Each structure stands twice: as C-alpha cells, then as structure tokens.
Length: 400
Image (cartoon, rainbow, N blue to C red; front, side):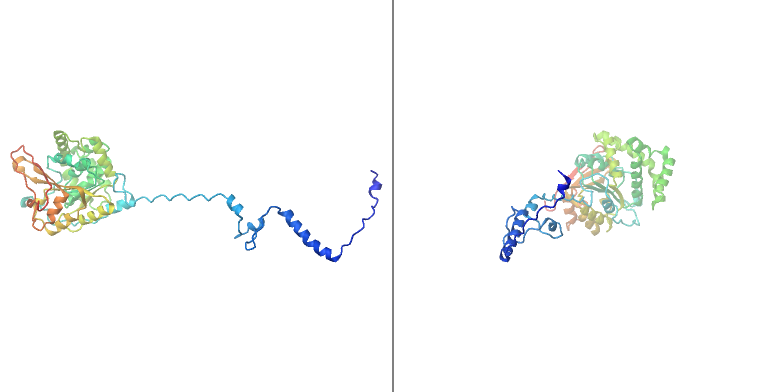
C-alpha cells in the first residue's frame, strides 16, 4: 500500500435523522437488549421477592446468598463431643495414686484427742502400748477377706498390712486411739517406701541397723509434728516388729496362706498402696465423737464402701456406751461388710478365739435397745484344750 494513499481522507457517510417519537421507542429497546446480553439464562424473580445480589453485593456483610451458592457451600463440620470430665475423686475401684482432690479428702478428716488413760481388759494392763499383735492365728480370717476390696479400718499395728495384702482394699485406715501406735504406722509407711523387697523391709527393723535407721528417720521426719515421739517409738518397737515379722511368716506357712512378708506380690501390692497415699494412720477412739464419724462420712463421699472393720478384743474393755453405738451405726458397710473380733483365751490356748460377724448382724445388734455388750449376741466358743483355736461366724439378727 502506498503510504500517501493511507493518509488520504475518505468521503463522509451521510447521517440519517430519526423522528423524535422513534427515538423515544428505541431507548427502552436498547436497554432491554443490554440486560438480556448480561444474563440471558437468569430466572425472573417473582414480584414479591428481592432480586439476587450481585457478586460485589454478596461479599458485603449481611448480604443474602443465592440458593445456588448456599447449595454449593459444604456443610459445617460438627463440633467434636467434649471429653467427659474426669471424676473428682479417684478412690473407688482403683489402686492408682490419689489425685489432689482425693488426697485432700482422704487425709483431711479430723482426728480424736489423745485419751487420758489407755484402757485395757484388766486394770493392771492399763496404759500399755500394744506395738505388735500377739494374735497368732489371724490367718483364720484369710478365706473371708481374700479379694474383698473396698475400705478397711482397724485398731492395732501389723494387722493392717496383713489384712490389706489379702483384701486388696482401695483405702485402709489405722484407727487406734494410742498415739504410739499411730507413730509406729508412720514408720511402717516410711519403711515400705524405702524398701523395694520383703528382705530389705524386714532388715530395716533389725537391731543391728537401729542407729542407722534412727538417723534416717530423724532426717526423713524433720518436719513431722511428733518426730520425737516417733523416734522414741522406733527405739522401743524396732526389735519387737522384727520378731513379729518372723512370726507372721511362720503363721502363713502353718496355715498355707500367703502374707505380705512371705509373698512378693502381696508385699508389692501393700507397698504400692502406701506409695499411692491409700493407707493413712489416724488417732481414732472407738468411744469418741470425731474421727470415726468423719472417716465414715468421707468414705461415703469418696464412694468406697467399708468392707472390713477390725476391732480385735476391744469390746472386752467396756459395755457399749452411747457414742460407741453412734460410731458403729455410722460405719458405711455394704452388704459384703464384715467385723473381725478376737476374744482372749490365753490361759487355755495361749491365744484367742476368732470371730467374724456380718456387718448387717453387728449393726443391728449394736442398735438394739436390749444390747449392752458384745456377749449379748456373740456366743463365745468354749476352748477345749491348749491346741483348740476356735473360729466362729455370727450372722443372726435380733429376733432370729
């Protein structure tokens, strides 16, 4: 193409003028055509519905969303179910370490005051501290305690650990009114914690190790309120406990029954109860109005039934006073609960009579208006000779 010809002006096109009326008709037509070009397939909204929002308008807060856009959006994911809250107390049905709330509950109940006089079945025995058991046939209770579970309460010292090995309780309480006994239990707990094996545990009580272990206890219980009494108790009791461990071993062999100082599994179980904070020494008087009632209320709150209450031969010391009845009625036994008692018969057999009473029978008799003492319902067996160790079960109710 010639560049010059490209620059040559073209003839102008004639302009056609429309009449005014035609112009007014053409404008709406052009607008309608433009609208059709923008959305040829859009449905016509009914007159009483709002027109769909434009893309720009739909992004504004509060703008309506079209049905197509709503259908295209994914359903919101359902929120996961909240994890159930753990129970506040973990005492029931478990042997794991107590959680903070449970430990505060179990170890926080009030105790009784020290008695002015330590009573006994005879006046010449008053004031005596019973730092080991002289009941030589406690294995007679074994088959009735084996795997019983629940909670244990009882007077005395080594009996608690023997029964705990058999029962496998969730909680165990030493409930004696002698402060010497309570301090001895604290020594037991410390030695269980320290000794991983039966042999090591027994050796801690041996006389040859007294000074070393006394010094260890002095340091271990540096902040203990009754440290001096505890050290005095250890001085008086260490060799007695060592000898008692040997007698428990012999009793177990004689009856064919495992014990916490002869069976490693039982020792490990009792030790783990200690480490879990599930064995607590208390100052508890059967005739006082504080500790046993508080412990009973605590067990109910923790959801742990009392399965065994060991009273030894304490019932021989007195007729039933009113507070004793109140304390025994408060004990939270369930239908499997039992009371364990002994009755002295040393002149005849050098030992005791052994009796197991169902909790239902015991609490019914204690509450009965005509009951004055245990011999009103406990038929104490006759000891025939020095080799006869009576064992009996009491389960009858008043009126039977």
